[in-house]
Length: 272
Image (cartoon, rainbow, N blue to C red; front, side, top):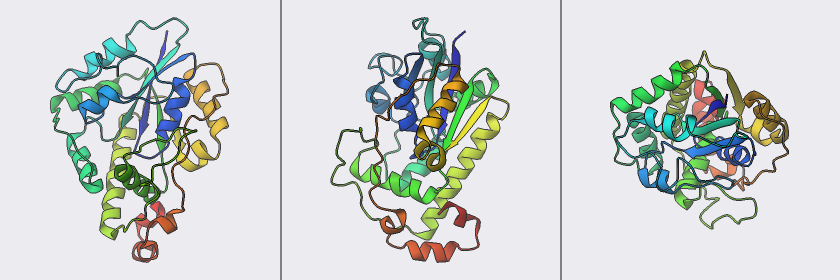
C-alpha cells in the first residue's frame, strides 16, 4: 500500500528544499502547493524535479470544486507506477483558510486571491485530520523574524526559491523597517496557524523539523529521517535550491535594536 503523506509548513521554513529533494526520489510522488490561494499559481507552479500530475495545467485544483475528491482522484488514489511507494504534497497553515490567508497577505503586501472556499475549507482540513493513515512532516522556523524578512524579500523580488546554479535577483537582499506591531501580528498568525494544525494532526504519525537546526545544518541527516519516516530507501539527494538570504537578520532589519528592546521580556522575544 502506498504511504500517503503531507508536508505541513509556514512560509519561508525550508519546505521548498524538502519538496525538491522528495520530488527527486524515485520512490516518491511529491507535489507542491496544490491548494495555493491563487488559482493561476496552482496551475503553473513548478519546482525542480517535479513532474506532471495534479498540478499540471489540466489537472490542477479549480476554485469551488470539492478538494477532498480532488485529492482522492488526482493524488492519493491516482494510479502511479508501482515503484512509487509514497505520495504527498505541500500544505501551508493558511491554504484553504481564507480569513487567515487574507491577514497574512495583507501583512506582506501580497495578493490574496479572490477565492473564498467556505465549507470546502473545513471539509479539506477535517478530512485530512480524520485520516490517521496520512503521515505528517511539519516544518517550521524558530526565528520568525527571519521568516518575515525572507517573506518580504520574496514578495519584493518575486523570487520564492533559488535553484542551486542560479543567481539571486537584484531586488533580493533588501533591508526592511519592521514595525514592532507588524512583527507581533506576524508571530501571532504563525503561532496560531501552527498550533491549530498540530492539534488537528495530534493523533497522526508526525515528524517535526526546525528550519535551521534540521533542514539547513543537518540536511543529509534530516533527509534520512524523512525517508525512514516515509518508508522509502535512503538516497543521497543533493540540494537543488540554495539559500537566498545574503546578510544576517540583524543587518537586514534596519530597526533591529529597537525591536529587541521593545520585545525584551515578552513572549515575542523568543521569535527574534
